[in-house]
Image (cartoon, rainbow, N blue to C red; front, side, top):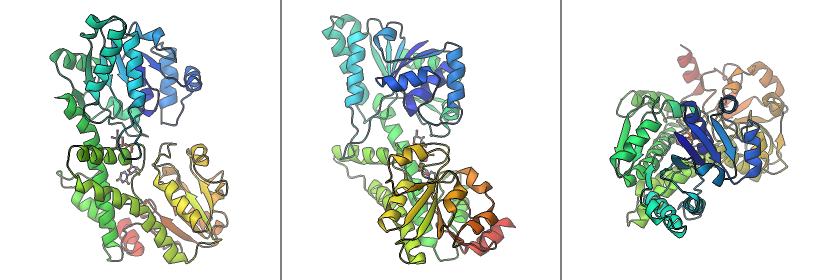
Length: 448
Ligand code: UDX
């Protein structure tokens, strides 16, 4: 099939590459000429494992093209997919102007029957608004008859940054919201080659599934973070609790890693959007208030632990490892790591930070007083303490004896518990995690 995808962000580009790799012909459209020019040269605008190699391969095969000119590609489109940003407004509601603007442009240009797919995360009811916007723009062009043939489907994405291509090709399920059988069949044909159950639902249910999935995952994280806050100093260990409850198939072991909380462009936004949507419909989604409150305070609790241990941070040199909101991405949107660094700076600390991929983005979000170190070990040189905020695998490979020699004080505050099993106490470090039992007993026991 011929796809036109509008938006070349984390969702649009990854989705475009995914469908192109399934054999479809994809044209990705974006208003950002500089971004399109880079993509045309085979350069990815953000880091995602395997993405740039896939981009180059599919371009060489002629399966995917990039353009700013929607008119040049829409004439052949069987499917027009909207993957534009829907960022949160101050009140938590999704900003839909980009999406509706794109829908108007599509309607003004559409001159043949095509299926619209809304991939962006949107409030319930938006798909119908997109369809109405496209149809009315077509009517303005004198194509009212044709406009009645236009259909819409909601096909939300569940891609995780850092695993997006793999998640596209191996989803747990394909959710399709639509009104009629022909649309369901078209979407199933579009996804041929992906072995996953197709869940056929109403349009509105599909829109709600997306935000509810993220809100539930965020709820799991805030739950285990509260458990971590309980067990501090009790001798219990939150990782053991997570393992013990997670083996219950009804609970599941994923998304039970305690730490400084969730970030990213989705969880915070979607939890707020669901709470806001409930409010609009006269319901106070009380659970989500707590999910957000726990997440917002978790990072400050972590900083408080550092202050309680070190006393004043004024003039103290802190090394920070990790700035991205999670490993395997350069994305710092809503990153808890960035929030913690800001807190530390606000308390007078000197920060020397390193992140394998997010340094360029982090420079735009942090003051020049932050020293951006070329390596993790360089960041730790002369540090009074090391603060680990993103669990990049490469941090596990460092020589801890070298690290200890680099630091003024061998003290580590681990916001992601990623060093919890390394027996650092036995190596002479003071080690503090989130919700760990006595690090000594936990590490020696876990080593067996
Ligand atoms: C998420 C959803 O997983 C994905 O399905 C949806 O399409 C987009 O939003 P993403 O935001 O890329 O994906 O990252 P994810 O791996 O879900 O992590 C989100 C945040 O939760 C990160 O800040 C991560 O550090 C945090 N997290 C995750 C935890 O704190 N504990 C966990 O156990 C898991």
